[in-house]
Image (cartoon, rainbow, N blue to C red):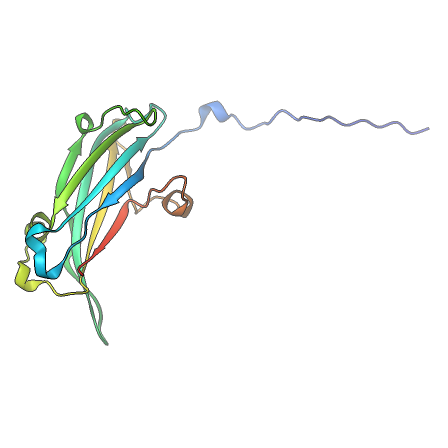
Length: 172
């Protein structure tokens, strides 16, 4: 005679309560475009939700960084400047409660004029098809930095997270 039994549930050996958690910025809405013939009235904007273990309260600052790029046929991409520069910094006080979720939210806009000034270009330097790359860097109260440099593709590309930290604005 042979007897055997099994368990329906096995207690995990992984100590989940000691895991470190991060933070990300969920994109709620994106607005604006840059138009080559109307840069004076062009703007780019986002509504973001700060997602972390404290419902957004660990956010200290969010750097909005920008750089300009142009595709040059048979050469490749030319960046101005090579490294992105800060065009604006959001503070923790810019994030506020909302009636749609438990996470803190903020809305901001960057005008084409602000982006041009940050990368030290003029409207005369801009051509149709140029791209402005806006990269966000979330700094939390623990001294950590989250951006497109260290986000996984699951967080950046999945619709639920919607947190690329990197936004492209093509000049139409």
